[in-house]
Image 1 (cartoon, rainbow, N blue to C red):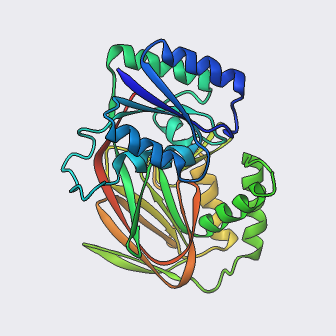
Image 2: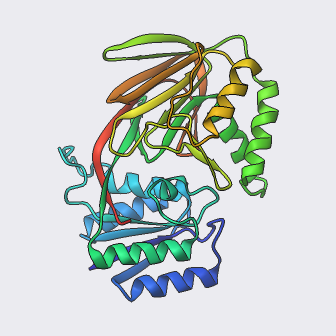
Length: 319
């Protein structure tokens, strides 16, 4: 079995020694080619190459950003190829080894957050032929499209992602504490009086006056350290997309919501200022001014219209 391992040498939680151990372990089980990602978008290019050359597996050692690029490289049509009715057919299986700060996709799949332990689990899955077929989300805007594995967002949460990326650009790590502190500081500076967004979709009543929209392909949405954050607890890889929107950003709305989503409850958050969707195939968010947009924790600029679609049976993942 031929596999290509994509290694992000700047992955937050691994070092050269750990990477060497993992490469030897995988290399003992498969015919392994190792490639380091050198720039933004490189993982997508390498994954597309692996697919074109008929590799059986593509493994990723890195964070959610590297995983997202890899997934897009595996799924995006090439050379005029028509979209398949079963996107996972004929594509390499995916192995995810967590190496980032959050590793939301890997943890949502049930993998350990430790890269060595995760490697042990995927090697067991490989030996037993154990795979899980998962659905993905897809965002489309201005003639562009990109798949996401666990979440997207527009408005406030994307603004926080943008701010943290700016801090990372100065050499600071994206720790849970940094996200929380940035979110608090950014909240104090947020315009809480002029919501910009409207949610529409086939068979969905229009929801206007939305400040923040969280789009989920699974649950949890993210983690604060080891603690899951679950604004859309019914979301899963086996259903369509879920959404949580906020029409108010005041403390009386946010305090009970934050308290609820930090629990292990399977109940949906409640409140008259919430907009909620579950298991939807498609919906669109439009804004009367450009708003921040993020996808799998990667800031993608400001947008006025983005359509979100569910893509069932998109990937086979060894878990």
